[in-house]
Image 1 (cartoon, helix red, strand yellow):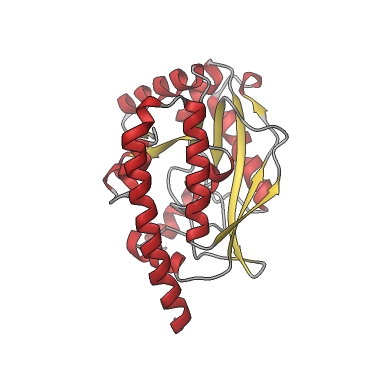
Image 2 (cartoon, rainbow, N blue to C red; image 1 turned 30 degrees about the horizontal axis):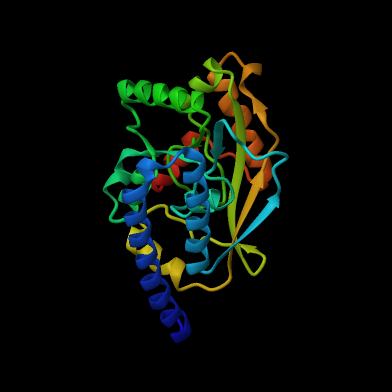
Length: 263
């Protein structure tokens, strides 16, 4: 890495930490007194500043026909940055794996912003999360879901898990498929990828020390969940919409498991 990249990285990480601490302080002090609309404005503004601090430009490659207001926003997932990229455009109450609560600083921040947590593989906890999704949607909130269940390197889409689509069918919610990808100098970049053996600190540094990264956001046509009776069919339709928007293939679960084992 060149000297310029190292200097930029140090400056960005310092400002990034200050920005996160300020966000934590403000959410702890004021969020419980704010209605969801005001929280959305705060989250949008804070996320936009964070992206500027990290030098990440946002390009909405396909603008939404209408801004989502209630339902499930479902996206592919390659980076911890995804949540802030989405929130910079449309603030969303995300569902995340329970391990994120233990992340230093960021875990506390996303928790204070109202993140819903799920323990994958725990049927009882998934049922509890589904009830929370239904309740939040009935209150007019938009719920964000990373249906692949893990992060990828951003070059493919994994099959979407269907368990958390059930509330959409039961409550006839709208599904808002969104594809997020990253590029540098007009080419796909894995700089923001948080997958494999990458550590959180290593990911922070790689992202902060790079210059010229763009987050590309593709909003797909809305999918009315009322058209489906099976959550598996709804999850597949959403997965295919995101894959088409990104121009990527859907990797089978079997191929992904083999790749993880190094076969």
